[in-house]
Every structure is written in structure tokens, then in C-alpha cells.
Image (cartoon, rainbow, N blue to C red; front, side, top):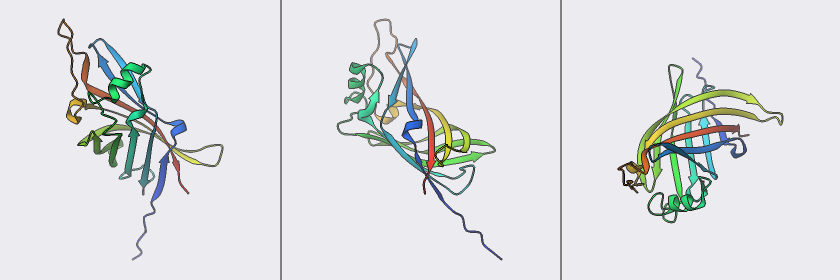
Length: 180
């Protein structure tokens, strides 16, 4: 009986063709969008559909950009991410293919607090680019409760409205490049 050896393919995030963003309700009536401008990640996969692929990802907290400098400074402060003491957000987990639906399941760490999260994954497929590289594309979305990770700053308006929602939507558009 012949055993087939599984080959592992290594991939890295292509930051030029990827973005990591978050959305949070402000005053319950509108949404503020922010980005992590500096991030890196890797994926190791033994299957063409990435089922069971190991994922590692980090984002630099200091790279937060909401297009408003004062808000960015506040988000980096101890009220929220505390970038001085906790400079990175990290994730380690797996892609799981459940009957054709991909999920990203693993441990998200912010401010030294780690919680398991499950994010929805839309696997766009694999394609070659004009430069001979093999790329894989994913759109990833999910929600986390910021307070569960120690981002507990809270304020209420005179009318009783919450200034910043506890629920934060994560939205990642990621292109991976196959490593040699």
C-alpha cells in the first residue's frame, strides 16, 4: 500500500493587494471606518481549497488610520488599544471548510486578551498574475465585542445614546502570494 505524502504550500499576505479594516457604529446613527495600514501574515495549506490551512496574522496598532488624527490618537491610547504597551494585534487559527462554506476559526489577541473568534470567509480562488506569481484571494468578515478584549472606553450622550458601539465589524480583503 502506497502512502501519499501531503505537501504543504506556504503563502504570505501581499500587502499591496490587501486591506484590513474595521467598522464601528458612532452615536448609533452612523458608521466610522478604520484601517490597519501595517500588517503581515502567512498561511500554510495542504489542500487546494485551503481546508485546514494554518493562518498567522499580526497588525501594528500604531498604524491605525480612521482619516482623523485626533480619533486615531485616542484609539491608540490606553482608553482603547494602548499601543504603547500592546503594539500588535494578532491572530492564529485555521481555515475550515464546512460543506463549501469557509470559516476562519482561531485565537484573536488584543491587549494581551485572547478569545476564540469565528469569521466568515469568501474564498475567491487561485490565479496566476502577469509576473508569474500564484495568488489566492479571500474576503473575510466577522464581528467581535471590543469590550471582551479590554477596549472598554465608554461614553454616553446627554440623550442616553452610546458614543461607540461595543460591536466591531472586521473586514479583510486579502491576497496571498505563493512562496517558492
